[in-house]
Image 1 (cartoon, rainbow, N blue to C red):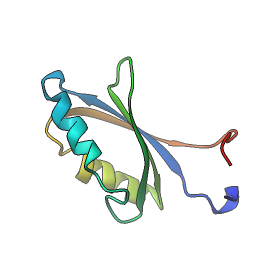
Image 2: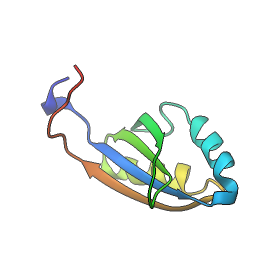
Image 3: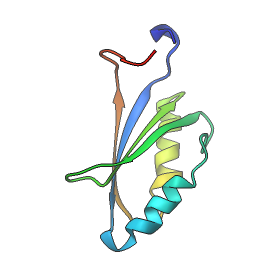
Image 4: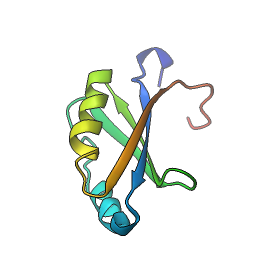
Length: 95
């Protein structure tokens, strides 16, 4: 895909209440590939360290990204905190 036509990719980090980990993971697994207008999910991973889960997604605009996080992720019972970062590619290793 051409870099010129590429949508911004965001990294969303999620902290989970340890008592509700399974419920949050289940809710994340149940999100459709297009959970809201202008947003496409790519990956959801468990991560180690200060954060519990990472979600990579594309959004057509910052407003779409904010809408997704505020209305689809933060309301999930057990989500304690989120941190969202727009990213820029340095090099892609997949074709």
